[in-house]
Amino acid sequence: MEPISFHRPVLLGEVREWLSVRPGMVVVDGTLGDGGHSELLCELVGPTGLVIGIDRDPEAIPLVEQRLTRFSDRFLAVNGNFKDLPELVATHTVRPIDRVLLDLGWSTTQFVTRGRGFSFMTNEQLDMRFNPSENTESAGDIVNTASLRELIRIFRLYGEERRAEQIAEAIVAAREREPITTTQQLANIVVSVAPRVGAIHPATQVFQALRIAVNDELAALREALNTITTAIPHNARVAIITFHSLEDRIVKRFISTRTDVKAITKKPIIPTEDEIRDNPRSRSSKLRIFEKV
Image (cartoon, rainbow, N blue to C red):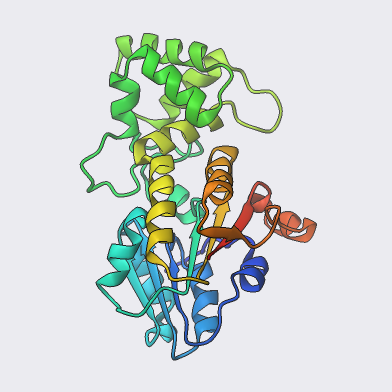
């Protein structure tokens, strides 16, 4: 059996420094993924602390439980959506939450091994649901049934795609000939009206937009920020790692407009040149941290 290759967590040193986790604390990793950040958090809280890892992807839970077996005295993995974080945590402990971490990136494992059509690098069914058991529309449902206007809105709003109208028109024309069911079909349609220029594949923003729409990611983030802040006690800290401007704007606005939180750093923390060189996927990451006052 080949060894599992885990996703490399970003800004690990910065999370250690600025989240300021101490022994005995209760810390919630609201985006468990492959457990890289939770592994660090388990080390920091020590045997008297507790780390609860939450992930929408049910396949992530047993993988991380196996990875962090040595921390079984202080680690719990829970399947759920981080927007429901306070409720999920309350079912496992009555202790107050001291720290929360949300890493809004998607792990390499989820993109590569789940077979749900998150990436155009492999030819898979167009699903993109984080949890396929949720009774929600898949990416295939959206591209085959959404109106032209709705497709344009999704690509512009969630992908910030300049050629949203041309791409949406091409999709509508293509689906009249046959259903669009695979990632390769969709990527080829995008390329037909937006030829590749430079290193970035022209379907990148379209796939991002569909993933965000399918999983309602931005609404979940807004709800999570409100519910978490209401639930945590004074002096508790929340750290959020974002990877694109849509997410970062939501977090920045939340911190700047709430009167019950304060920013720990004036500007977002970004990866060092060394980290970007060692882990290019970290390039667009930004870390913002706030504290309940």
